[in-house]
Each structure stands twice: as C-alpha cells, then as structure tokens.
Length: 209
Image 1 (cartoon, rainbow, N blue to C red):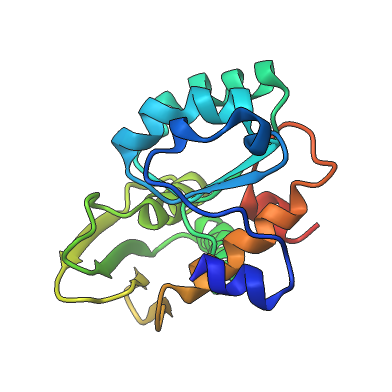
Image 2: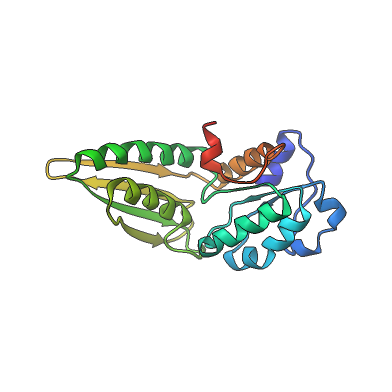
C-alpha cells in the first residue's frame, strides 16, 4: 500500500526489505525509512536506522518502554524521526477531539470513561498503541484510569470506541478504519514532512501545525 501511494504521488521509491540492516548505507543516506515491522524488530534495528537513514518514520508500536532511549539515540545521531501509534488522518483528528472533550469532562466531573478496541487476529499487541495513546489523553485530563477492552477477531482493520458514562447520559466517540490504506497514506505524508525537520516528533503534534 505504501509503494502504491508513493508511486501515485510521483515520488521516488527505493524498495522495501525484511532485513533493513542489509541496506546499502549509501542508499540509506538518501532515503526516508518507513518502519512498519514488529516491536522486536524495531528494538533490534533502531540503532541502524538512526545511524544510516536520512530520516525515519515509525509506525511500529510496542516499544514505549524504551522510548527515552530511542529518542536520545536519534537525537545523538542527528536523524529526524516522526513516530505515531496511528498515522490515520481520522485517528489523529480523534486524538485532538478526545483531548478537547476530556478537558471539559474533567472540569465538570461525573463521567466514567471506557474504551473498546477491535483489530484483526494477527495483531500482536493488546491493547493497541492507538488505544494506549487515547487512554493516556483521557486519564491525563480526567484524573482517572480508563477501562480498556481488546478484541482480536478475523480481519478487522481497526476500530476504537471511547465511551463516557454519566448518571443521566452517555457520550461516545468512535473511529472505524475501512482498510489499512489510511495508515499508509499518513505514513507517506509524515515522510514528506521530514524534509528540513530537526529532532524527534510525534505525528499528532505536527499534524495541526
């Protein structure tokens, strides 16, 4: 999907690899690497990415426990990096709306949050990185601990629903992905934004600039 979007937009595509550490350093120096792998693969490869590529876009999740280490290494190498738990434009709008909603709900009180996230049976992490990002926003603004439930079934691309249960009513906010193409399109957009970028940034922080 990423290859298709790159070619549709008339950008130069250097190829893909399941063994990124075998990439010719001379080629890597001219390329932005888009990483959609596994937590273990990213942990093993991030130093090579930081040392060799022009810039890196990371859509892999499940490495939050070493985030400070990763950020410090990319900054040490002077390699720009954009990361996200979800590169979908719709999900990044949902991050912003959730932040606004929960600031209001946290101010007035009386609501308890919950979340249900559903993905395909091949997804390795649970809860999803997107669910963790949403819960972090909710918990930070409302001073609570969000109950998150994960479903892994079939080929569901990804659905995230947040509910806020009050005594007299319920608010719900939901995002449903129809395919993984939205994630690919956002990652390509992020790759374009690395030009002239300095440092490590989360995509949602760049999204509304």
